[in-house]
Length: 113
Length: 113
Image (cartoon, rainbow over all chains, first blue to last red; front, side, top):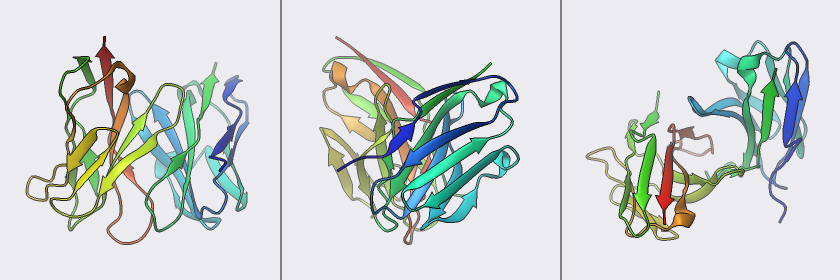
């Protein structure tokens, strides 16, 4: 079975740019999560979708972060405009709604100069 | 809100040492509790879970017992190997249905040969 796919694996952006990160969840999974991972804060939830509906949009990230699920097998995370403090690993995870176990992708490492 | 606390940010051991990583939770009722492991360059992956008081979860030689009285779910392994070097996350799930998790800040385990 294919796991969660994330592209690109690495992204370098200039301050003020718009970047779009992509995620393909495990086929058949209903729930999709976007996280930001840093050494200081650990895993922070950015967005949570259930069956393509936005269930939670991390309050602190609302102004410049926008996640969308275009269909059940594809999601994007847009950061606009980027700032150096956005440098982190962005992780996508999916799960079946009633099984608790989340399957994570390998992440996208974003560096904002 | 519901949360988990991991007190060790870094743990350094030698091969064959006994491992304990502490996890305490704050929640009412009986939330599901999880351990995830993250190896370098990968996303976190599910290790095991427990949902009831005194239930033991285990996988790959790691184990933890759900303790309602002390609100704890400490990770243990009798004899660590260098290949166990990774970041370990404790997580708390919903009491009803759903797959949204609240993660601790993680503990980085380094095992020396």
